[in-house]
Length: 389
Image 1 (tube, rainbow, N blue to C red):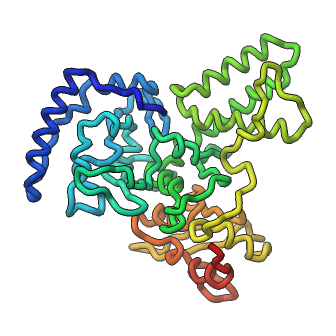
Image 2 (image 1 turned 45 degrees about the horizontal axis):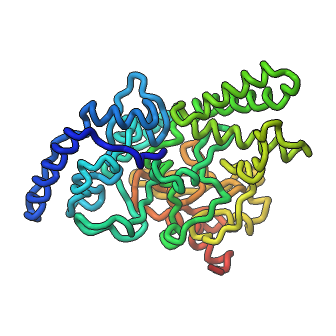
Image 3 (image 1 turned 45 degrees about the vertical axis):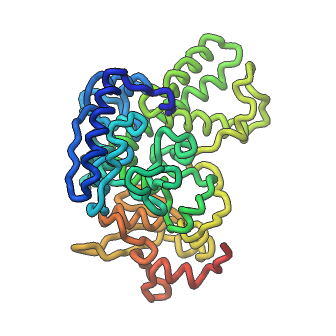
């Protein structure tokens, strides 16, 4: 989602500049609590945000029908969770480039995993891979954990499987910062925003099935121009950026075309619709994973050295000590962890989902039995894998 052309109405911008000047004066007193005039709630500004992508959440892509929508500050304005001793990004409070349209669930919580709460939402959470910028300073060296929907490189990291789950695209390498922190930005974004809540996976699954059917109709409609036109028109409607869950629809279309070209030695569709689709169509978990250069982030390297019979029961039971009682998850042969019946590719995000603790280290949290002995994932990794990074 490109917001580079976003500008505020001139009258709004003039008032915002005056408010920012007040903040700058107040911020000189380190002990003074800053107050904000909530100008971002005004229709004059929100209408311009809606015009960019339609009436849908920029994070989960759910349409605003009757549910309230928020103008979220990507970088929190007043305080950052976990760092209450310092101020937030107050100097960005009236900067439209820091605004993201968000649904209530993504911003304030309320999503569900069955009978389990999915957590509080983004709110003022804004973890980093590295150091935070100084107050009022440049953001160029900050490395956010939360994927930013207006950054193309971030959007390209997210894929979807055929069941409707948001997933990290496995062929995308981890950044050096992720490897250094043993953390996956995609998994943490999915966890914090509850992008695999009940409503979302059910809705995406239905949408993906429809897209797949339309692709099959389109591919089979040689000589039937009306059928091909209908399928193409519907696909274009479902994948346009203003459509609900369009990223999942676009991923499903690419995967369906890729499967077609891989299964048959077909020439590209007339008009160049196919072309280099096999090179471009890479999403979700349908493709083989790339070599893991940072096996301290996910479990693919670890499961690769475990004996196949370890997964004969369908998965390996993992246990962790929660605040009130033990928590459980299942490690699958593809390296994913099922927690609350949701897949995550990294032990740390799975542990944080299970406990609600944003600081827990999943490698030392999860344990499994090996030859009758309980070992942490960290112990097992160190025992079985030679660190060649």
